[in-house]
Length: 74
Image (tube, rainbow, N blue to C red; front, side, top):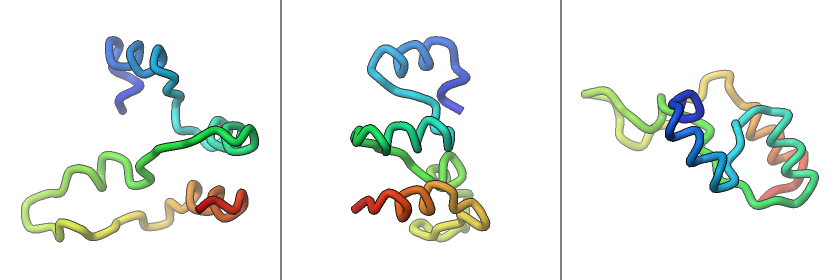
């Protein structure tokens, strides 16, 4: 979502940020670049009233986890 906001996307790009796509992530992992991402995205960041504060709701979205396993990330 943040990459779609014009000013914010420019700031992210200027600071070295890239869109968190599978292709970009795999390329960065292969190059040994440090990564910081939030696999749950906005759905994990902003909880609705009544939702458990520290619960994960990834469902079937495990692509980044699978990449981390593939590249033996710690």
